[in-house]
Amino acid sequence: MSIAIDKEAVQEEKPTRQRHLLAAILLAVVFFSYIDRVNVSILVVDPEFLKTMGIAGDSVQKGLLMTLFLAAYGVGNVVLSPLGDILGPRKAMALSILMWGVSLVIGGLASVFTTMLVSRVLLGLGEGMHFPMQSKFIKEWFPPTERGKANAVWQTGMALAPAIAMPFFTWIIHVSGWRESFFVLLAMGMIPLYLVWFHTSDTPQTNKRINKAELDHIEKGLAGEKSAQSLGKATFSEGLKSFAGNYQFWLIVVYYIVHTSVLWGSMTWLPSYLKEARGFSWAAMGALSSLPWILGVVTKIMSGILADKMGRRAPIILVAMIGVAVGVYFGANAEDNMTSAIFLAIGIGSIGLGGPTAWTLMQDIVPAKGISTAAGVMNGVGNGFSALAPLAIGFLISVTGSYVGGLLYLVGCACVGGVAMLILTIKGR
Image (cartoon, rainbow, N blue to C red):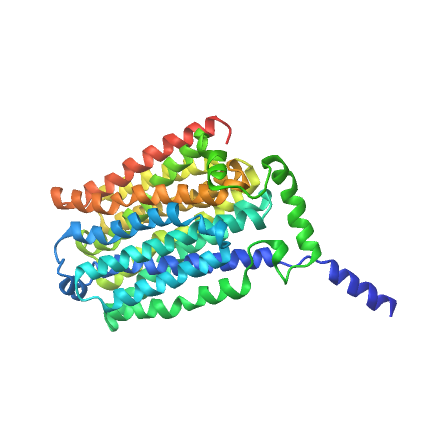
């Protein structure tokens, strides 16, 4: 009897893993949100969609589909992120998913290009709301020594989604048609909505499934940081003042503009480049388009492990920028088609080293009372400026009659991001 009681006591003392479940749910939310975004990358290669929308042969209009989404996404991040403080991250994230659903219905029923643009704007506003909530969850649930890996987990969804979506939607559109792809996405969106609503809570203290051992672990890890940053309820202006004058925060924002420009520029145009410029078949295009994002899964995991192990963030991001610049440059200039595809996969996949680490660096610098607003500013400004990338690349393709100029635009972006991270590396970040 005594042995049985002792075993039960040991079992009760073992910490639950609710924070790990939360990280997995955040991964799922990002995964499905990114699938919603990247379907347009395949749609702009589909002749039936282009004919219905009346944009066949118009590279600027194709780029506009992603650019308007990103512009709305940037506005949503900045304007709607305070809802995380008003409603809490759980309710705000659920609301954003409902907005995705409405946008997908509009997109699936669209018969003219203008309606499709409305769908993209609504999708951008909805998805812009949820990204700052990711960071708010991480800041409240994970001690600083665990945030690198936690950020890497949910950011992995950003690479998994296009890795799976590119060949999946190539198949769906080829077999069923482009409209059906929107309704498949709508059905899939119910999964993250269920997970967020029924299996998350705003803070560990309000979670019904967490035990004392895990709660103590989290609170102990956060204690020093909360004391140093004077955690507590703060007004919007107080939260803004906590980071607005910190030049290091703005260097991270500069980097994130570059990061998202490379991300959305390549995600929008890579399938078209492989199909039209390099002459790959429809099936080969779908498979090769997924390669950078498969590599991105690996680099994101590496990023989280290195960030926690090294305690330094900026050098990792600097290496990411070097990888992007070198890979994309040689991919654009390679004579052999397969060699080009491999170099581009390495270059674009290198961006994964920077994403999780950048968010961890921001969470290190910004006090908890300003984290939701800072995350909204960082993601909103980053994606707002990066909205120019798909359109700029489309314009360069149209003017030069070649994809090379568009790809070199990404190389230039990587160089700017590298300079920003070099400064922070010198400063010991």
